[in-house]
Picture 1 (spheres, helix red, strand yellow):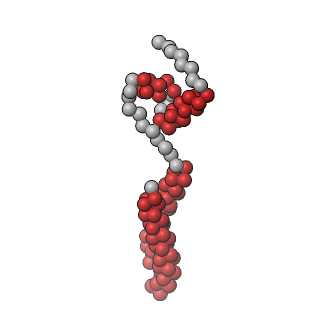
Picture 2: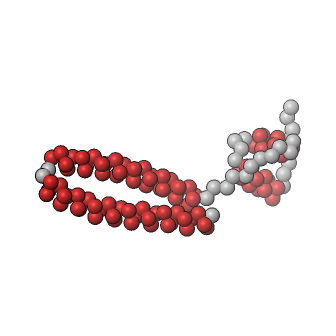
Picture 3: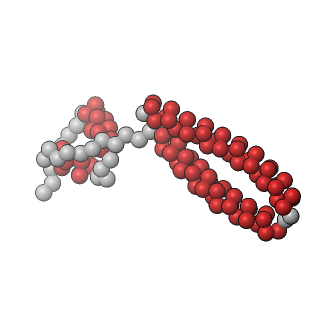
Length: 118
C-alpha cells in the first residue's frame, strides 16, 4: 500500500535531519520505523574523529612494519658485518629506535587526551 504525507518547509527540514541522523538507507524504512515505534539509532559521526582513527590505524600498521624490519636488519647485520661494524650500526639503530619510542609515547598521550575529551 502507498500513503502520501505533506510537510511544511520547516517540517520537511526536520524530517530530513532526523532521517540523516538515523543512518537508515531509505526514507521508507525510516518512516516505517517511526510509525510502528520501532527503535532506531541515531549515528553522529565526527569527521575529525574518523580521520584521527584512520591515521592512528595507519600509524600502527607502519609501527608494526618497522618492528618486523628491525628484526630483519639486526639479523642481516650479524650475518654480513664484523662484530665491531655491527655494534657501530646497532648503536645508530638504537638511537633511531629511541626517537621512534618517543614518538610512540607522544601518540599514546595524545590518544589518552583525545579519549578524555570524547
